[in-house]
Length: 323
Image (cartoon, rainbow, N blue to C red):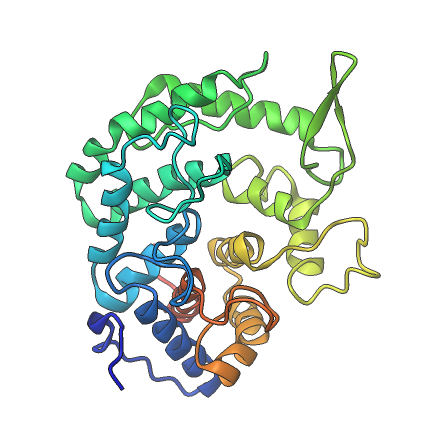
């Protein structure tokens, strides 16, 4: 058999007394190797390119398994060099380049994950050439978004990547406005709709929205202790949403359940991360030796972003560092 995989993963080894965790990390390595040959991809048999947002996770996994980000660089360089697609409005970044759809559909949220990935890539590699070469594209996205700003300036902004103080101030204001307009006393609601000139909450409640709020600093454990405790205790992949907060839509694998694991790590819930990883990924590793797009078998059973699971496990197992 001639394999079509990233050979740089061959030197990675993870041995542990918990064989289920060991199997999940090995499955994550297999998943990354088969989705990081020349550019990051979502799954080996579908688009010959990866989707933004997914790549935010698989790019970090590449560094874990190979010690570098050469494939992610290829992926991001493609976006940097891409000319404006005629099917998209000026400034909008493709969802999946160079395998994007040609029907004019785009996901604005994915373009914002692109900016976050550029920031992470710069922090991990120090490669300023890529971020500088992407400056025009990033600010083109900012300009595209300006026409959607409402009277409160409610739109997430670029702030860290280019040390733009104006956009930093805008993002600070945005977080404040989101709390004022989205938090209903118990949960953050997903959106408002303008009715007769006024913005009104719609009681659209999702588990993922709570994770977004904490992950991006709109909420903190200190400011929202009850919601945080409820999120840790009552939410997650194991929640029976027919009886536990049935009015709140459960999260899917990406990005809700992954942001959950990152939040649990951020706040020190290491053992819970390990238990949830085993509950969520253990079946996948056992059945296919790869990690999946969803928790069920009717979609991709080898999805690049899922390889970050190994990073969560290894971080949860690290000795606690003394200050």
